[in-house]
Image 1 (cartoon, helix red, strand yellow):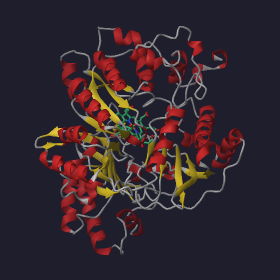
Image 2 (cartoon, helix red, strand yellow; image 1 turned 90 degrees about the vertical axis):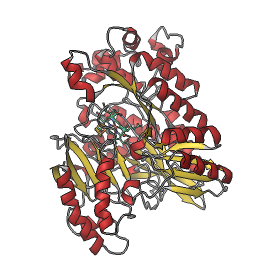
Image 3 (cartoon, protein in one colour; image 1 turned 180 degrees about the horizontal axis):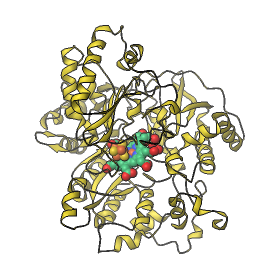
Image 4 (tube, protein in one colour; image 1 turned 30 degrees about the vertical axis):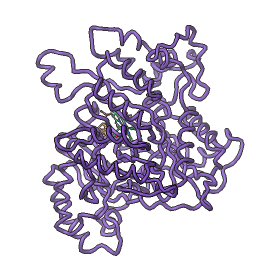
Length: 566
Ligand code: SRM
Ligand code: SF4
C-alpha cells in the first residue's frame, strides 16, 4: 500500500503512523536512552496514542536556557475512564501514583478523564504499571483515534445512568485500537515478532486523520456539551426507557488564530438509531471519516471539515451505505443546561450522590483547603463510586444515607465543605494552560479563579451572585475548555490578554460570538460591568445572560461555525 501513497502530499504525522509498526515507533529505545529526559521526536507523536504527551515546565524555561540545560522535560499521562466512573480503590491508586510519580495533584479533565502531570521519563513505565494494577489504562486517551467516551455522570439524577454508562463503555471498547504495542512496551507482554500479525480492523495502518470524540447524553442534561463532539448519541426516553438515540455528527471546538478557515462547529442531527445499533453506527461514522478526512493539513482534518466540504447529506448517505440501512427520523428532545448541578441528589433507589465543584478540575491540598486528603479519606471509608464529570467536577455517587453523613463530616474536617459558591464560579471551566501546556499563549487554570472573584463583586453589587452564568477560559484557541459554548468565554491571545466572546446559551446549543479582542484584566472588567448592570435591570423573567446579550444586540448570534470570527 505504501507504494501507492504520495507521502510528500501528506502531513508528516501520516508517515510516522504508517512507519510506527502499529504504534511501537522507537519508544523502547527512547525510554532506554539515559542521555536525555526527552523521547525521540517521532516518538512524541506515537506516545500520544499510548496516552502521554512530552512537555516541559514553561515556568522554568528561561532559567534552564540561561543555564544551558535542556528543558525540564516531563510527561502528562491521561487515563482512559469511559463515562468518568472509577471505584474508590481506583481513586486511591491514582491518588497514590500522583504522589509517587507526578506533581502530587490529580487533574479532572473536560472529558471525564484523569491527568497526571510532571511524570519524568524514568517513571513512565512504573506509573502505567501502577494504573494497570488497578485495572486502568491510558490506551487511546490521546492520538488520532477515538478518545475517552463521555456520558451523563449522575446516577441519582437519572435512573438511566447505568444504561448510558454501559453504552459509553461499550463504544470505548469497540473503538479501541487492537495493536498489542501498549501491552508490550509498558506491561512487558511478549513482543509480537512479526507486526503483520497486528491488524487494525477499524483504523487501518494509518489510524484516523485526527482525534475523534464521542459522547452520550440523557436530555435534559447536556453535561458533555454533546454538540461539540465529533459524534453524539442523544438518548430518547419514552416511558422511562431508552428507546434509541438521535445521532449527531461534526462538532468540534478547535480553531487557530490567523486561519479563518478553522472554526468551532456544532454537530448536526443525521437521524435516530436503536440501542442495539449504536456500536455499528459509531464504527461506520469512524470509517467514513477515516477514508475521507483531510490527511494533508492537520488543522483541517477533523470530521467537522469533512462534513462541511462534502455536505451533511453526502455524509449521512455514506454512513447509511456502510450500515446497509437508513437512519430513522430524529425524535424530539429538550436540553435545559450544559453544566453540572452541584450538591446532593437522592436517587430513586434511595442512594445519594454529591456533585462537588472542583475548581479547574485540580484535586490538590492547598493551605487549609485539603481536597485531596478529603477525597482520599472518603475513598477509604465510604462505599460508593467516584464519577468524573465533563465539567471538571466530581460526583461522589451511590452512597447510603449513613455514607452521606460521613462524607459531609469528612469534607468539613478537611475544610472543603461546599460553601457559598457563586452561580458564576459553579459554572466555570478553565483549561490547564500554563505551566505545562506547550500550546498556551496565556494563563487559564491558574488565573480564572481570581478573575471570577473580581467579576463576582460586580455581580454582587447587582444582586446577581447566585445567578448561574456559564463562564469558561482557555489559554489558546484550541478550545479544551469548550469556551465557544460559554455565555462568557475567554481565549488567551498573549500573556495577560484575552479575546472576550459572549452569547453562548445556557444549554450549550449555540456558539458564542467575538465581542472584543485582546483585552487586559482592567479592560475585561470595564467591558463586563455595564453589560452586567444592564442585565440586572432589564432582563426579562428567567432570561439567561447569553440570551440577553443577543436580544440587546451586544453581539449577533453565531448561527453556523463557518461564520465564527476569532
Ligand atoms: Fe485539549 C491539545 C488539554 C479537552 C481541543 N489539549 C491539548 C494538549 C494535549 C496540548 C498539546 O497538544 O500539546 C493539552 C495538554 C495540556 C496539559 O498540560 O494538560 C490539552 N484538552 C486538554 C484537557 C486536559 C483540558 C482540561 O483542562 O481539562 C482536556 C483533556 C480531555 C481528555 O480527558 O481527553 C482537553 N481538548 C479538549 C477539548 C474538550 C472536549 O474534548 O470536550 C477540546 C475541544 C473539542 C474538540 O476536540 O474539538 C480540545 N486539545 C484540543 C485541540 C484542538 C483540536 C482541533 O481540532 O483543532 C488541541 C491541539 C491539537 O490537537 O493540535 C488540544
Ligand atoms: Fe493548552 Fe490551548 Fe488546550 Fe488550554 S486550550 S490546554 S492552552 S491547548
